[in-house]
Length: 157
Image (tube, rainbow, N blue to C red; front, side, top):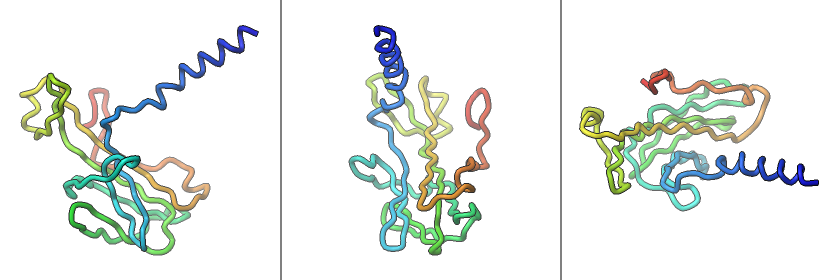
């Protein structure tokens, strides 16, 4: 009787970190409205925020057979949206949010790549997102990631 309770406690302790996310982490997501897929950045549970649209590095639209569909990228005031045909089953996007240096007071400062040597604690924040609007066996298989970047043992180059 004691052993099942310990197992339950250990399982709960093991999966708890999966649900804990940093409060400051921004994400990218798609929101469908009136024939357009808005590309949003921020906190979905709160609100989206304006962003530099040049940070979007890639978007790919797929049909139910995982074939790539053409789409139009639309500039909005402080964001982007895309429009595609009626057969959209999935969209993936890659967003480069740039480099940030963590300062001593737990504040973050956006810096350029050239400024990296001037700081001790720097992160390069990349965002990858997928949205599914339909489902099939083809869509259940892994998607490719942004092709310009390569993951190495020392990080992404």
